[in-house]
Length: 609
Image (cartoon, helix red, strand yellow):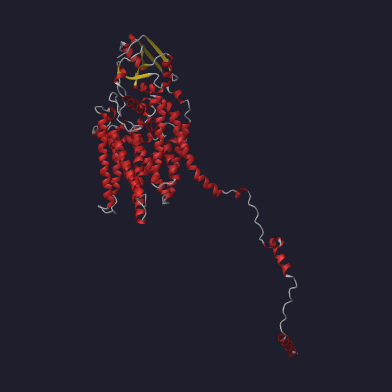
């Protein structure tokens, strides 16, 4: 049986394999079947279900759009805040100290010279915002319009040159907008900071603007030098870059000379710190040989700047002639050594109050005002700590922009040192606003340090991001504070009420103490000319020549009557001393303002001096 099975198996294997049956379907039909839509559909994978709801929103694209537009919007908000203050809010806080710049512009315009020898200047600042205000003198005269337009131009220069400076420092437009936003809003932290930067410009605020312009030109020159070297290495044409270099250097030297025409104060808080920043950055670079080409070039630049400083001082002396700035000179003197420690102890409170920290004794620390105060205190402390942290990280600033950061740091410390010498050893400690140059440079260094830490993704990146939060919150508080100032904020300013009263009485020339006189003249657009006098405790009335011209106290041609505006206290002093002016006055008027303060106006048929 096994043999039969084996024989059958051998027969099956010996038979040839049969070929498969021939395909009887015509080729044309088969191709038609392959090309038919039904066949194609059968081969395609099933479609994914449509995405609906939140998943359908292109979040990534929206995020990119927000990150591109948000910085610009924030900067526009910050600029709008300052513009709102200059145009509207400042009128409620306007006083005679705010008139310095416009009175200098008026004095120069009247004399046709940079400085007016008949005017008694508080300080000599021929190169400043007064030049901008002179542009509007022929159109609007000594008026609030001229004042407002001049300060708006200062704001434009301040914001523009800060942006240009940090652009040359390597910031992209996002960081530039964020930095400018924080800077502008932090400078609205207190009434006094607003006054220093947005109500008028003297050496405190000018020094910060000069820093921005000077550093922009210096950094631009550095970038052009680097670009020229790249072109030389690549064998490119360097002619245009070389011309650009020389033009930039010439503008820097000319600008530096003009800033030094503003005298010892501008030299102390801008020119010397600027030069110190350049010198110390090279001195501390031990990796570069002492006589290397880069160091020789820097020495040449410093010599040129020193020559410009000398020429600027000589030009100042030429313009000034015999003019003496009493206010500026008085605060350049030493005080007794016994007062130095007390002056130093004033610094912490002066620093914090300048940044908006208020005295709110008795309030609970969990109340809204207390929390606002704590935020402002945090920012005040950060503005001291962050420049120190930036200095500690000094060796880490590398790359194309590292040396620029190092120059900024040294300039800040040089300016701070000079201001603190005057603060501790001199009379600067008499008022907190004299620390404003240090506040300004501290803000710049703090922002530059945080930008570096975040942009370069250092180990401090996250902490730096957190430290920006209190700054952002204080910026928000300052925004609310300024926007809460109504457009008619002038109505709460007594000086506007007094001007209206005098105009209604037909009085347009007279005298009042300084804090009323100059401000009322500007507020009235020179329709009421009020000249400054001093009223002593014994009731004696004498001319007060600070920020005035001597000719203003003489009898004015075509003037039929004169007035003397007095507060209740001044009127009482004159009454107690039986001042003769009380009996020679043709009439006496009385006004009570909206704050229930009483003023007296003595009217005379002739000049009282």
